[in-house]
Length: 143
Image 1 (tube, rainbow, N blue to C red):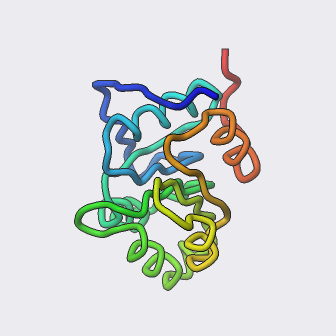
Image 2 (image 1 turned 180 degrees about the vertical axis):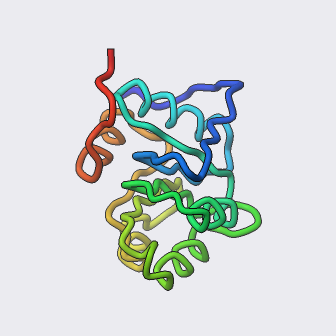
């Protein structure tokens, strides 16, 4: 079983007016970029944000991804608080969220947050791609 480990100097930020398939909300830059590069290689457009507040600001500016991959433990605004706020906003509540965390009882936490799924860290690339494919069709054909 291989796990995701990748670093990139690219920030992975996308303007709020550009539609994306997946929003990755993750405070660890290596993890966020590894996820982004894997998904982009499979044809998905991806934006990354380093905490829940930055993600809410991005969504508040009009971005509507098809899926949010959400870490639970982050500075500024953690995944728990992000999810509570997201669910209170009718324009954002319908965007499915998959938890991505290395914590215990992740399945229970996913149910408690009404998440569409969960992935344990370290992330298995094939499982990530399968979960994303359940919620979003790739925008581009990967070469």
